[in-house]
Image (cartoon, rainbow, N blue to C red; front, side, top):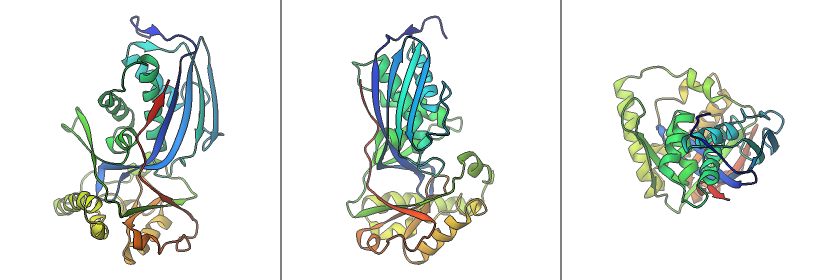
Length: 306
């Protein structure tokens, strides 16, 4: 611990709420993200010493119960950046976001810990979302999920250069007729595994085609939901992961053949559908045995209370 760091007083608390989120949305690989009205909640309290972790819901039996828990690790990281530390900490968390399903559970945990750090270290100051994004990007390695968790809604992200220096995000509008459905598979796929099967390079023509559809997707989501099928076509990451999630790719292709803008959510295996209200009403889950259908709305960004 750096000598200049100041210990936080025991008893100080932060209550955090963070949304589930999806990255990529088809062609927007590592750049487009969306938050949903589906939340994890936690409370962190500074203790004089020791670590206590109480988790209910998703991951209750599997997540670490010490300082390596992602929320606490990110709390420590954020506090160090702000010149503070917690001698001890109690985490009480209720998780509803499925783990390793492509719905941003790790991004939500990282943002929760970092937002808690700001709230505990600077309880009177509004959260600096640029600081929060920079810190969360450093943890996750890509900005789309964490930006959605921070800002809520639909977001566009970019970095200033290939080193990742200077990460940015802006919100973008979503047309009121857009409907969002998630088909959540029962089996997990680790993000590290899913990213590991991607090629290091792609043909120039495919990159150009993908860029065109990513641009179209921002227009379709904001102004023209009738274009969501062509706007969600992509070339960079979905077919490449077929062996890891064959049932998800089969469902995706079946839905697209029927005119639905289906994509793999994040690193999968959840299948996300972006469509209009009339088409959404045609789906009831029977078309996807082995998946749990959940209808979603846009979510608010992370919130905190001290």
